[in-house]
Amino acid sequence: MRPLLIVLALSLAAAAAAASASASGARSVIRTVTDIPAAVSSGAADEADALFCDSWRLSVETANAGPWKFIPARCAAFVGDYIEGPRYASDSAVAAADSLAFASGALAAAEVGAARPAWVFDVDETLLSNAPYYAVNGWGSQEFNETSFDEWVDAAKAPALPSSLKLYNELQALGFHVILLTGRTEFQRNSTEANLLFAGYRSWEKLILRQPSDIGKTAVKYKSERRAAMEAEGFKILGNSGDQWSDLLGSPMATRSFKLPNPMYFIS
Ligand SMILES: *[C@@H]1O[C@H](CO)[C@@H](O)[C@H](O)[C@H]1NC(C)=O
Ligand SMILES: *[C@@H]1O[C@H](CO)[C@@H](O)[C@H](O)[C@H]1NC(C)=O
Image 1 (tube, rainbow, N blue to C red):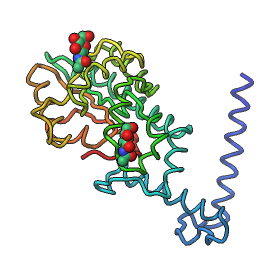
Image 2: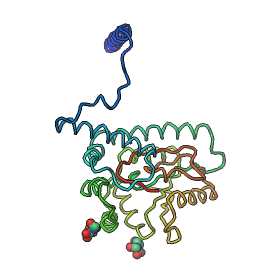
Image 3: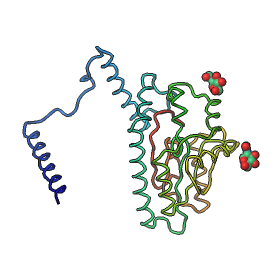
Image 4: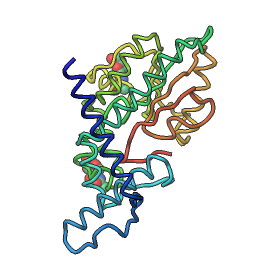
């Protein structure tokens, strides 16, 4: 009983404080960016960069930014801090929890009928994290180097995104067929399979990679075509998880799509 009483007392105190704040009259709750202190010291400049880069991150996550090639140079440290700090882990974990909440409800609601319930996962920055590669390559502020990235892929040492691995296992336990759909090429099948196993993933239904005939297609076109093929094979795609909008958009679309954060690069 005692902890409950303490919690109750604390919430009453908080409610009283809120009531007295509102009684003191309207507070200005919307600030303008000119409220930010002028850049008189390097501290203030850092603050302005942090504010700008957080807004830039929102604009790329919502796709307001449209296609982009590099992160702004002033945001490299911000992106590094974001990926390595608790925010990326927390954003990813909330996305995974939202996915699981939907997934259990969707199965219970028998939206599936006779079809096999499926969940589609992208690979890079969805199941696997290439953060160790980007950490030594400017966090996306440098031009993409296909040679060095392919070497990293061949090494097959990318770690799992922990919340994605947890979700992956939970979806399989619920009875979902997990299908992996990646922009990596068929030539990278072995290293991709080795890396997925290294990171702890097991028992995927299939791993779909770009075939020679897919080279040059946008990710939206390539991935939509493959989702159409899955539906033709009798899968009902209830969920789709990806770090790029091009993993998720296009017809047919999953019943629900889940966008994971990625402020390091953009794929159309
Ligand atoms: C790209 O990576 C390769 C392999 O690591 C390296 O030899 C090459 O110099 C890099 N190219 C550029 C433009 O940095
Ligand atoms: C992939 O692995 C299989 C079997 O382990 C092997 O036969 C094949 O040559 C490998 N392919 C490549 C491109 O390394």
